Image 1 (cartoon, one colour):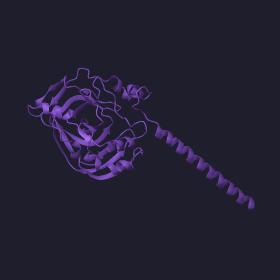
Image 2 (cartoon, helix red, strand yellow; image 1 turned 180 degrees about the vertical axis):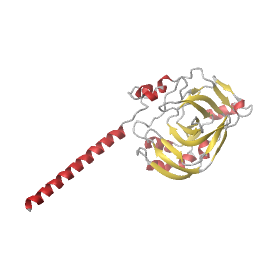
Image 3 (cartoon, rainbow, N blue to C red; image 1 turned 60 degrees about the horizontal axis):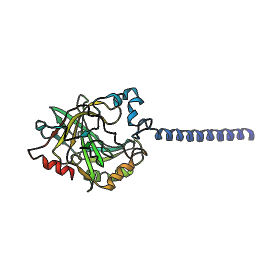
Image 4 (spheres, helix red, strand yellow; image 1 turned 135 degrees about the vertical axis):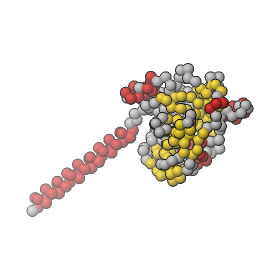
Length: 285
């Protein structure tokens, strides 16, 4: 009886040891997976922005595309386009969640958050996310942060509104999310429900904007994206910017793709009325 009991104890101890070893190996594997990134923003690195097009076959457009984003929006090359008219959009408060995607922070709308209409086509707002510093530049100037409001049409075509930020007064839209930013810091793919969110508060109040055809600014860098970058620069507090940059994974505190070549693309600029000088002045203050 004693030998059978000893055998059972020995077998149980062995099984426990195997389970513990498996747990340690699994934890190590998970840690390695969490530390690995398919792409980075570190110039000169193997998976840095200049090499995105070589990492995967489906990412080749990142390296070969002729209509890539972001670009420098130069007033010297932008053509006045009064025919574009005011932005035709309507946004609705809707349930949303905040997601740490590792390389950025995204607010995902879980319902009808409203639409942006361009040339008779409705582009439905799906999510917003941030890049620091700004990806687009205006007349060579780079700003502290850029918000992207991503819209999709029924045909899965993309239209993005870009909003630039400089350090100043706190941003009300981000202020409502600050507690959630702290909660999802350094937690890849963690999703927190935040309740009703009004995307109109993210939109800002600028009426003048640039318009051009470009691409997504992360792999696979798909082209055919309609870009609308608001001329008026809004503000964000230094504390809010720190919350955003500290929430992402190490190495993604700066998650802005370098400027891409314009390659002769048309850049249009809409400004209400004939007094566009005051919009230039307001944006540059």
